[in-house]
Amino acid sequence: MKCVVCRQGETREGTATVTLERGSLTLVVKGVPAQVCENCGEEYIDDNVSAGLMETAEEVAIEGTQFDVREYRAA
Image (cartoon, rainbow, N blue to C red; front, side, top):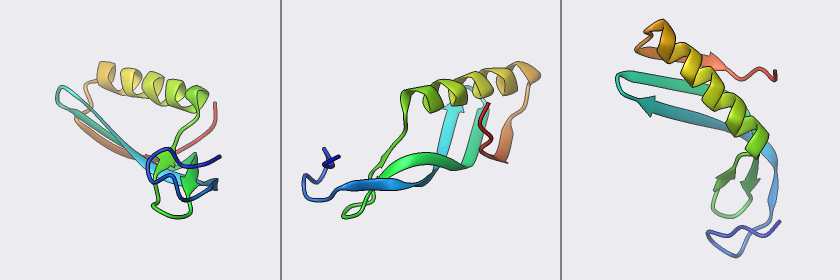
């Protein structure tokens, strides 16, 4: 797909590092599947992957964790 940010590059499969913050929680997830623009590096995360990340963040927040770094694992 054409990048909507730079409008120059095409996206291709890659990975991203996603940082989610909520209250006192900071969750960093590495190796998240994404479409990455070959020109500007903008990362696009699929809706299903985003939903999974949000569920994980909710679970981690309930546990009372303040900072967590992990590798992405598909559900």
